[in-house]
Structure formats: structure tokens, C-alpha cells
Image (tube, rainbow, N blue to C red; front, side, top):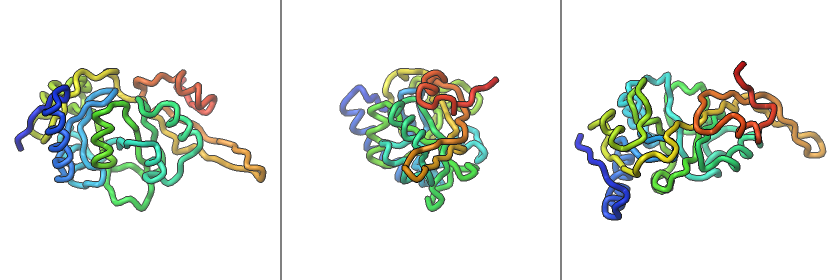
Length: 231
């Protein structure tokens, strides 16, 4: 497979790179793209072949399923079985941005992200190139553009050094603004209960699966005591 880096600061490269990235994803191939956190390696979330290629390129197995990037908050309902109000509040506050939330996946979806145990990790990135591509192709399975065990790539050149010809198209958006991976929260134990008057009671807890660019105190400002912190 031949691949090329497209400099998205140049209009001609941006247009060509985005067009070829869309085609590559439709062909079950891989694309590297910039996000607000670190560079990501992306596949069509609904392509079994593409997701398998993503995991293989990183040296991972199905036991490490990739998160899914989306272009708007409304896709939360389409991709999940249940969205607690707290998840909506967190998304409204921190999306687009460096927050990934794990929820129970919509069971009717025809995808295979790996051994997810019926869950999906979702994020809306705060980067115009990533969002534009997501608008074109729909949800993408995206993991950090590096080999497993290596530091995440914060430049397109670093990503290319890691992944080489396993990726069809590299979109170069410059150095990653944050340079740190997203914070991942598990909300699968959160339950909403409404009384006869419509009053909401939320039970369960939120676990931090991975610390990242979004700090615990920022999350606590929305989640309050439902955020479970390590001892």
C-alpha cells in the first residue's frame, strides 16, 4: 500500500487529502488525522475489516477495542442503548473536547469493535479537520496513532514513523494543540430514576478509566460526588 502525507495548511493538499481520506475509509483502509488531543488512526466504525486493520497496525488485539469519534451530540442516542442525563450534561459541557465517555452500546448496530462487553467509548473531538471528515463519513473508530506501548504521536510525522504503509492517507494538521490523550470515563453503572412528579434521582458512580487532558476537578464540577476517585 502506498501512502502520502497531505499538508492541510495548504488548500490544495487539504482538498485532495480529505477526498482521498473519505475514499480510503469507504474502502476499509486506514487514515491518520489530527485531533485536539493527539493524532489518531481511524477506520470506518462499521467496517469489520477496517477495525481489524486498525488493531493490527497498532499491534493490538480485539481485547483493546478502539473508541468511536462522532461529529455531534445527537449521535449519542443513535449509538447507545441508554444515555443518562449526567452523560448529556458532561457532553454539553465538554464536547467538543478531550472527554471520552463509555456507555452501553445500541445492541442492534452492525459493527465489531472488539471485545467491548456491550459498551462503546464515544468522543466528539474539538478539531475542524477531524469534525469535517466525521461529517463526511460518519462515526469512525479512532485510536492514538502509535504502536502499542509507544508514546502517542503529536505530529503527523511521528505517526507516519510508527505506522508507515499500513495507513493509506495521512492528514497533517500541525502539532496537536493539547498533546495529551482524552480523559476516559465509564458511565455504564449510572442509572436515572424519575418519580411521579418527574423528579430525577441518579445513582451509581463514574469511574475514571484513563486520566488525560480533562482534569478530575473539571469533571467533578458537573458530576459531583458521583465521580469515583482513586484512593
